[in-house]
Image 1 (spheres, helix red, strand yellow):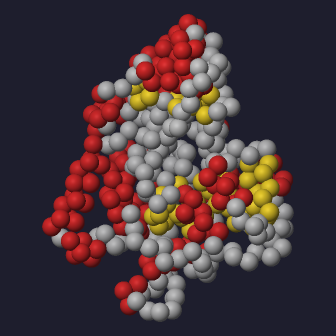
Image 2: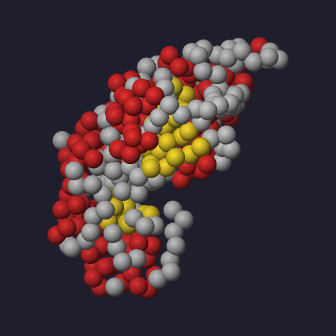
Image 3: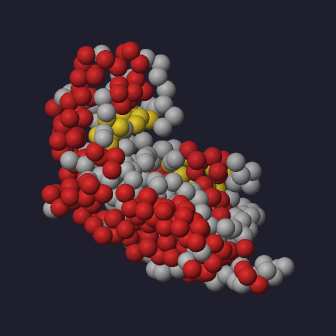
Length: 385
């Protein structure tokens, strides 16, 4: 199987130039994304406004349906947006006057963009707790929303979702599952999980690039909730240009304005590959690669920050270092593309197309950088990405 997955390497041009281990942040671009963007440009050039009726207008749903096949969501339950912040803001807009049920509970390690959104709402009381187990204990009858990360971004810890969903529903709260760090590398079924909402994007393991975020709404909720952050795509008859709002049926009412068409063209190139291989096969390969990284790092005396238990580990491995930013910069100069997070470590994210030899080379270089002190010349380095 490994050889078969490695045969996909030629579909990702950047792999010929560098050791690319940052798929947890911006996955390698499929060559087909460039072809798709040319098709978008061709349609705009040759078909003009007719393109809307020839597929563009419905892409917010049709592309979402492809993600639904990957993530166990029924047709029509996922709609596309620009990013997770917009998607969660639309969810939040369904509850403009929460009253006494105004608490939002999440873990301290939640992604900052999500935290900022809820912190900025004056009508909400935010409760941040230590971990996924503490979320279960913190949910009560005052809890409105539980926006949780499926996989934590700093250390790739896979969260225990089922007890959170169960407790939230007992208390009458809604769960918003952020699948950004799991979609495309960890198998899951949104229907089986029973979450109320799920969000994510395409930049990471889905190999879809920026600008293609997504929002899943549980079908029964989509028929009765009414978002106040809404646009003309969310109207029952958008091209009637009626002066009063009438919500579209289902998740379409969670749409806003004009879709990000070029981003959706690019994203489907990544989705095609993920759907073709299947996430279970990708997960098996990922666990093998991350375990190899852990073993190699331990042999080299490097400290691992990520969970060793494969059942609790996402797709990346975080390695502690004397100076994360400086070590990261030196790795980049040696042709190894990765990233780091403050107070965590250097993050290495192999995908199904990475080879064992690339990981051995990476850890050997990382160990040399730390042992030789080569990173010291980059002291004070910062990294935006």
